[in-house]
Image (tube, rainbow, N blue to C red; front, top):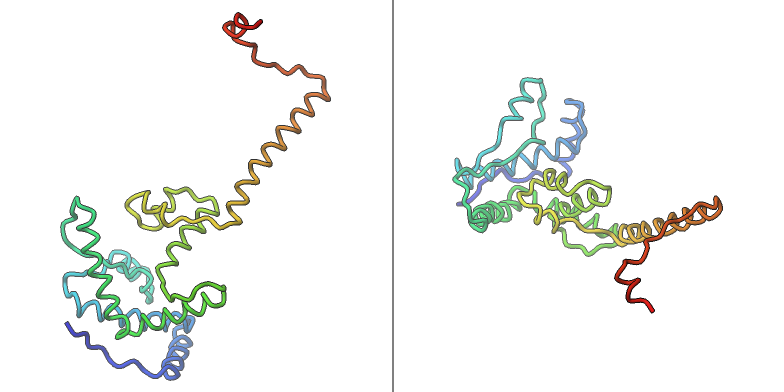
Length: 219
């Protein structure tokens, strides 16, 4: 199906319009720009899937009751249909959404824009420039893991169904691995200090007596 959207405006014009709207609504221009692209993306998805792909609206309606006028942060999509016990079947259904997003991204103006931002950040960080956004999910899970969050908590935050999936997203930096090794050194130093204190106090340190079998076999 061909997706038809209004032509993207000139970048300079869009920037001016975002600043004007932001000043009127008292928000940041970046939020207005994000809403603009997200609206185009949802519009394109609606043309591609129709009723097959739904916009989850529970939280959106709750925001309306509270008087909010920006609701794009809760643009959760739902793919209706019976879930299969076969994991691969469910994955294939979601792959269809992924493939459509790749196709309509350039039309909506989302794919090229986000990829450009990502490549710029990767270049500044001295990383390989791929422009792929999915790596941010790995960054999210890894940062939580290195901050001490439990695997179960990370699983829930990432929206994974299986712990094994979450584990594939959690990576440790070399610094985090070195810090873990230093924990062993710290433990050894503490044991040495405890033994030294015991000797200084003249305390008796109990040792395990040899078993009867060892005593009988000794010469």
